[in-house]
Length: 371
Ligand code: OSB
Ligand code: MG
Image (cartoon, rainbow, N blue to C red; front, side, top):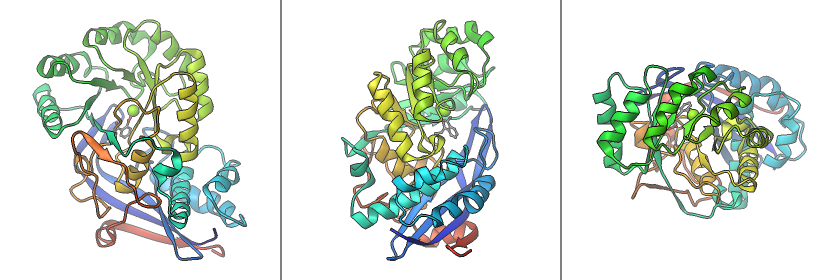
């Protein structure tokens, strides 16, 4: 496959409701999309999951666009033949910038699989055609507001509730949700907001039979997570810390986690995401698919990944309507019986609503081999 153009497009899409985490509030997403065009005229889409600000990880949208333009594309143009498997080693010399790399890889893989007539799920090794969906519920202004939000999501059929927590918003909201809704599948996500000395406080969550606590400590604190694991009954799941299959192997060997959240963007792409899945499977560590408030483009990739065999817990693979009034894809993801369907068409299996895309576009940059 040869590429003739790579388009870097920035869009601004308002969320249906503000989403608050321990690292900030999102109301309006500033998203970088990548669209590749092959010599044969086949197109492929990629979505960069970096946030507008570098608060979840070191990457941010404008930085990812610069990295793709300045450092990744020159390496792509030098390849005599472009496939996702060839792209990955060609980009390896550039350190980090995993979300930028993942966006480019997704677009290349979409075009490649559309050319082959193969769905992403089928190509990755999916074993199901629909996946159970959970929902991530942001920090609310009050407990009654939180209970209303959870009530709404349960009414829609979501199979698992994840509550965002931070110091000052942890034991009481969890207790309130457990008391009101009984035996639901419930877990929490701290986005690295605690320190090891908070262990005794976090142990209070042990009373509520949570499925897991996600990323309680700093991204680079594997040893701290291992020490915390020894003091909690609630299983620890890592998100931010797991940046590669090697990081997953290290975390597992150290006893830092009992479960892993996999996000393709966080680990540098779908190929590495599958390796994380495989490493975890080999160690008996269950995984689930995280989310980064994606549009239908990135969501299609997440849902395909979530159909692999070791994804044994519901993911943050919610329906389009949980995020957007109008998604970028012509067939938005919907919740049916608490599940979302894995797209069956070639590549990502989605088509983009071009009229809506143009309306929400803030800038377009078109780059070719000579630019
Ligand atoms: O930590 O999982 C996270 C959203 C943005 C950044 C980080 C996280 C999240 C979520 C939302 O929890 C998951 C989703 O529904 O996409
Ligand atoms: Mg998380």
